[in-house]
Figure 1 (tube, helix red, strand yellow):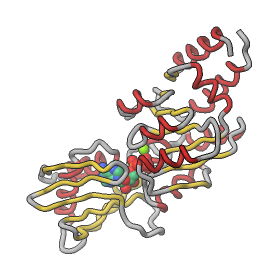
Figure 2 (cartoon, rainbow, N blue to C red; figure 1 turned 60 degrees about the vertical axis):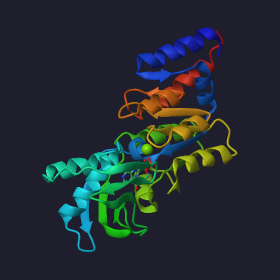
Figure 3 (spheres, helix red, strand yellow; figure 1 turned 45 degrees about the vertical axis):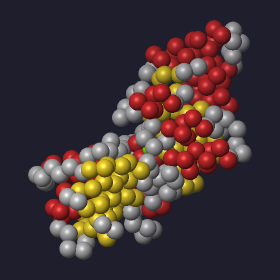
Figure 4 (cartoon, rainbow, N blue to C red; figure 1 turned 90 degrees about the vertical axis):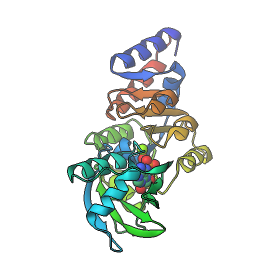
Length: 275
Ligand code: ADP
Ligand code: MG
């Protein structure tokens, strides 16, 4: 596309709440046939609700939640937000953790009342449909917390439109467990799923692929390396971390995935224009 068409397209996108950091990303998007999606906060709203609290080994529900909340206080992950909200609702004592460490795409750990606590990606049971995190205290299981994070309502239709626009290949790349990833993928009509990927695994997956002009759509939480590694890194705007804003090539500021097909159409129109 010529400079006039490019400036016009970038301006048109901005008017619709889409930040495009350079005309070259629209050039690539116009050619893209391969779309990779992060799950949490991207295909899903990133607002999980707790569906079950299952204490184990003599822990009570209260003790389990108090302990989990203490270490989650240092995280901004949607799971941390859900656990902290639930703990507040239950009126639990606000404990704090020392030596809080976030392990991206895995969980959090810290010291609570002198005991080492981790809250990490859970249950390997493939029959578990939702997201499960397990709480481990001094190396022993203290129980599990089950969460459900539904697919965004506008995803299915957006993906159908992308397929109609010629997308040949779509996959979910997630740090979550198989059951949780497959449930969301089924909901939105994606058959290829990759699970238990840490941020660097997602990046490596994208770097290894033979496809050209790959698009990665993420929310910036645990997927900044993938936003960088793909030909076109697209971030969801809201809840979207500062990270997403600085790493992505394109940001959907309105946080609506339905803007993806709109942007592909816009990019195709742009590349057909000479001036
Ligand atoms: P996705 O790739 O689906 O967007 P993330 O990479 O953000 O998901 O997280 C992957 C998994 O790591 C989560 O499903 C969860 O099991 C675990 N996890 C990440 N952050 C936390 C946290 N703060 N507390 C507990 N578990 C977490
Ligand atoms: Mg995510």
